[in-house]
Figure 1 (cartoon, one colour):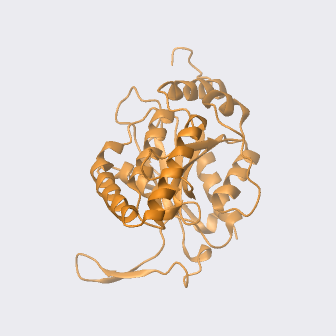
Figure 2 (tube, one colour; figure 1 turned 90 degrees about the vertical axis):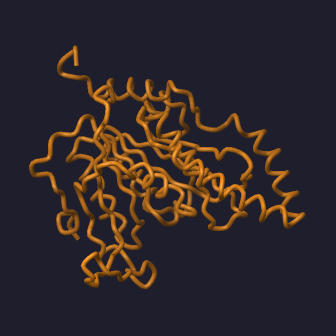
Figure 3 (cartoon, helix red, strand yellow; figure 1 turned 45 degrees about the horizontal axis):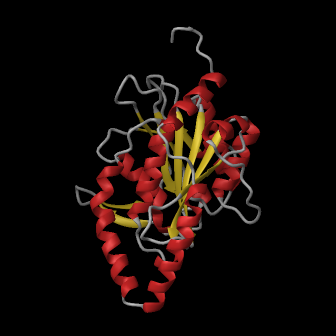
Length: 296
């Protein structure tokens, strides 16, 4: 299957993007409790985010697993909603900000990973994306009573040095994000993977605090506002629900206390969160893409 058959780009008349960065999250194996997609959905809420590209659903999904839904529109007409993988742009609100964003908050495909990844690489090369940032969430042995930890990795040596990231060490079964990272590396497109740990004992319950942690790190790395403060009230509500559930079980309470001790021991190994991360990323990107005008 050819990329042109499944990828639609709406670029006619589109004003050039300013040094774009692509940020993506896909609901599925790499997004426990939809933490990552919720984070990007929140970042785009209440902002103008026009669609510049879409990946057709039909070739990529087993619809007995990811079922479409039916609904009625404002005129009362019945319609079917399929899994959506739309790429949207967020223009920089402040001219002093260095980057526009191309954002995908979508659904991980079940089939044809290679073709789906090539669609995203085509978008990255078409818009001259400077770096791709994937965000995800995984179940982890961490307590809900502590700030969620975000870890990052990259295969790019320059980015690893600039942002203090590790090279990926995981070996084993993977999802679309793992395939995409490998394809981006081969295509010469710098990429960073950010993952937040979600308390595994909460099952698939919502955990807005993990979404906030991802948005905070995106804000530090990209130097762009993400609106994470808007999730604070929801995070407090869910924290209360989690506290109540754990308090009802003595074994669960003891387990959380053990996780708290382990968390405190490992906290220093998390991704740096200083405000200088954005400056370090800028320095790296400037080295990769020096401006034609030295005064630019």
